Amino acid sequence: MIFSSLGFISVFLPVVFLLHCLIPGISGKNALLVMASLLFYTYGEPIFVVLMVCSAGFHYIVARALAAVSHKKTVLCLGIAVNLGLLAYFKYMAFLVESWNQLSGMELKVQTPGLPVGISFFTFQALSYVIDVYRGRIQVQKEFGKVLLYLAFFPQLIAGPIVKYRDISQALDTRKASLDQVFIGMRRFICGLGKKVLIANTMGQAADAVFCAPLGEVGLCAAWIGAVSYMLQIYYDFSGYSDMAIGMGNMFGFQFQENFHYPYGASSIKEFWRRWHISLSSWFKEYVYIPLGGNRKGKARTIWNKLIVFSLTGLWHGANWTFLLWGLYHGCFLVLEDMFPFIKKLPKAVTYLPTMLVVCVGFVMFRADTVSQGVRLVGQMFTYQSFESQDMAFAIRLLTPWFLAMASVGLFGMASARPFVLWAKGEGRREFWKSNPVQIALSIGSIGILIWCMARLSGSAYNPFIYFRF
Image (cartoon, rainbow, N blue to C red):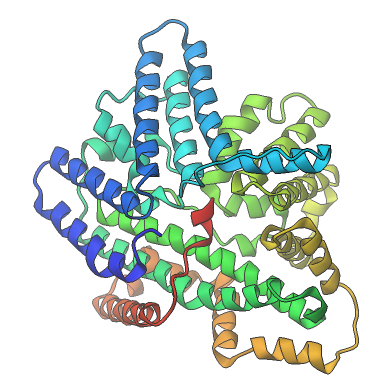
């Protein structure tokens, strides 16, 4: 596993941050962050750190070649093929062989060394770097250390957000974090930690109980509790990690793009994907959808392009038919919204609940281990059953006081907690948010949440972020 949570918070991060403040000169700071990032990854993936360094070296060479040779397209195609080939081998080979065996009746076997943590994230970052060099959008980086730092920077290495080189190229050469930026970064980090430890982990316990229970024991109420719990868990887990990454970036002088913007406040699937995992959806739009033709080649081609993109989006999350179906499911609803434009003219109050229902049902398939399990759980959600004592007893056991408290906070914060975002980001528009008493109160509150989270972490088993496995 990557550094234990307590060890990271109480030792690793403070030591690296303090050294980063003390070391003079950008070269020394960059060298420190490279070494810290490699140490961070080596702690949990001692074998695959070599793969990541080699990947950085390969893309450094490809980018330098793109800037020097005339046959740029050939070099780019080679770089993309090697990049995607490695991703396919580590992430999809076993899935492809297993699927082929099921279809053909053969018994082929394949041995892979496991899935490197975060491979989908640093692979897509590397691809965006070489493609942008090919397009002439950025200048090639001549220092290998800066390319390595871009790909391996520990705050967002494991689970994003996916950072484009052009967004941090200036910070790699010159950066300075003001005291205000550092404090805002710390608050943002603690906000993300609280999302994960207090809300996501609590929701995850209930979701795991439902998804791991025999289907015969899951009635209507339990199925809905599991579905809503996982919907909250994945949002607070992943947005929590993004908050932590953005906060740590601020502390070290980097500005990462936002990865979430109240996705559960969306009133259409199209709007949902403008707000959910923004770095991934924008990556697919820029590097896949638009090169395929986007919406410039007629309605039929537009529909096809969207279904391709969402199929790839689903597969990006994992080698399982459930992820592919989840991606296609969202793609189909997006196409339906385009085919029936009157939907866009309906009041948001009318379209909001149907949109959230679509998202919730989709996440049931996303969380399910198999397509069969996902279909049956969705069926339980919409099948009327008499409220038998056994089914109700299971559902009631899930509704502990702590679960109800965190679910209430989660439901409130998922779409309408702007004051909390102002607290986390330090972006208050009114002087009230900038006044010293408020800032002191927020700082004390942050310390309290940090202590609370550390206390809960010290007494619980290791519970990694959901997106670590992607």
